[in-house]
Structures are given as C-alpha cells and as structure tokens.
Length: 148
Image 1 (cartoon, helix red, strand yellow):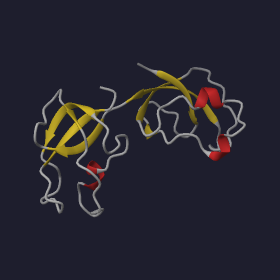
Image 2: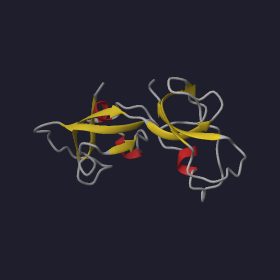
Image 3: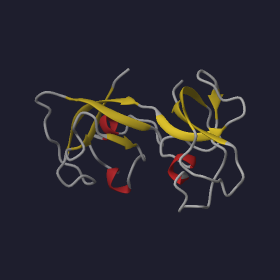
C-alpha cells in the first residue's frame, strides 16, 4: 500500500530507496510537517511514483526543496540465525556486531530493521558473504518484510 509524503527533490525518483530517520530540528515550525512526517522511523521505503505536477516546496532540510511522492515500505536483506529460519517464519537479527570490516556487516546490521524487531522471512537467499563469523554465529541471508 502506498503512502504519500514529501521527499527531497534530489531523491524524488521512482526506485529510490531510503531509510526514514524522522524529524530533524529544522522541521520545527514548518507548515508542511503534517504532510512530510508521515512515515515510520527506522523503516526502509522505496519511491514508487512522483506526483504529476507536484509543486516544489521550500524546505529547511533539503536544499532544493521537497515534492509529493508515493512510497512503499520495502523488504530488507539481512543475516539471521539459521535455526528455524524458513520462508514465512518470523525472524530477528542475531544482535550487534563490532566487526565492521566483515563482508557481512551490513547484512548483520541492516538499515530498515532494528535489533529485537521481528520480521517475516520473505525469501531465503542462502549463505552469507563471509567465510567465518567472528562471533561464531550460524547465519543465513534472507529477505525480510518488517511489515509482515
């Protein structure tokens, strides 16, 4: 289901993905706050459409202004514990990982899903890109639907 929101003009293109970070200090007093701050903080979204003839509105956060777009919550690639993981199951991330140089780090700490948050496994992708987990975790790479 699509949601209409305001997005920075530089990002307002179909297919653009972003994680909504919430209200910035510069949003205080903005007349467009109720149209702009409509998304869930920490959730990953994809622009599905830019509204035809959408007026470019001034914005204290986005230097080129904002315009109306339609967005949908999107899935997130992540590593989750292997035990009990199958398509349709719910899963949570294994926990924080301090090994930022690991090729799996961005999957162990993905943008769009928080540690402790349950999400539905949409698809199993298979083995993670790392050869060895320095935390000795048994992980599988999956596609998660935080809304599922």
